[in-house]
Image 1 (cartoon, helix red, strand yellow):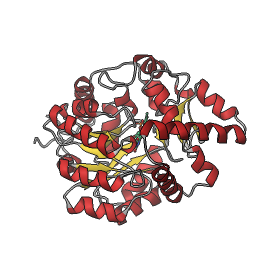
Image 2 (image 1 turned 60 degrees about the vertical axis):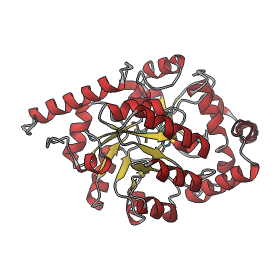
Image 3 (image 1 turned 60 degrees about the horizontal axis):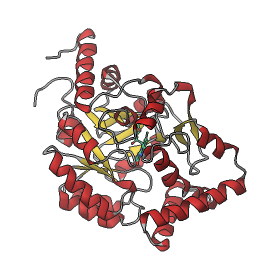
Image 4 (image 1 turned 90 degrees about the horizontal axis):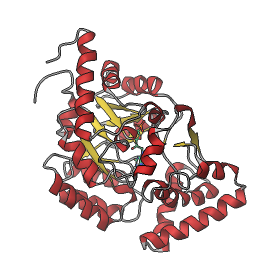
Length: 355
Ligand SMILES: Cc1cc2nc3c(=O)[nH]c(=O)nc-3n(C[C@H](O)[C@H](O)[C@H](O)COP(=O)(O)O)c2cc1C
């Protein structure tokens, strides 16, 4: 590997060429997108948090047929079948695992014992410190600009706070899309950047065209944070479905959650017991009320409506603010090459040695 400013400790940790992570996104970061990312020299995480153990097994098998580069897996330690998924990750030789809420020290120890890099995403300083106490090898820090569940503090404030507090490599996330952002994150002292929305908006992303068009056309101001989907602050594009949630009464929200929860149970074939256990784990790790826990049942069906079935008005559109600044859908190889070139240009302009 060459020794340039872009060859950071993150590259050594993950075995990738550039310090660029494609983060996991439910129903989006599939084997094809992750393989395209890894083949381009970055590092991708498969979205295992919305998969059954059997689906994770099959997707990892497919991924290995599409790339010989190292890759990662995302999971929630409280999802149904989490322990089995950890065993599957070990069996497939996954290089790194990402996770967020509800870390399990037992499962982290098992993963680390198998030589798997543990790299959680956190949205607050105290969570970053706790993650390292629990064994994280590196931490992705997501500022409030980021898509999906997100914290309250912007990247420019949170990132230096976390960098000051931790010894392990810190990766900046939330609002990144280009080489300027990568150069800026490295200047802060980060070991690289992680991006979700930018990779959602690529040619290899499996999101249907009608939904991708809603993202390329989105205005920055309409990408807002709401807790009406699943009880937790989540950044999404404001659309008809979100407006309906925001205008619903408490009873209406509850009814909708029950309907979506039953539909999800039918869709996954999961037992009621395993779904309740998962909901309980989510409730405990996020300190949710019973009402918020019930609302969590909304998310899978409503997100799939837009991201899988291609109905951008009827479903929910999780998104980083950065979608408002993106209007193209490049292939992953072109995207990664563009980011790397631009980062080199910015660093050279600042007088740093680049190749
Ligand atoms: C559509 C979408 C789905 C997401 N799903 C997940 C997920 O399943 N697991 C997870 O840990 N994070 C998820 N996230 C968060 C991203 O992994 C990532 O942390 C975030 O997108 C980074 O901010 P950015 O969008 O500004 O790049 C999701 C984000 C988006 C936009």
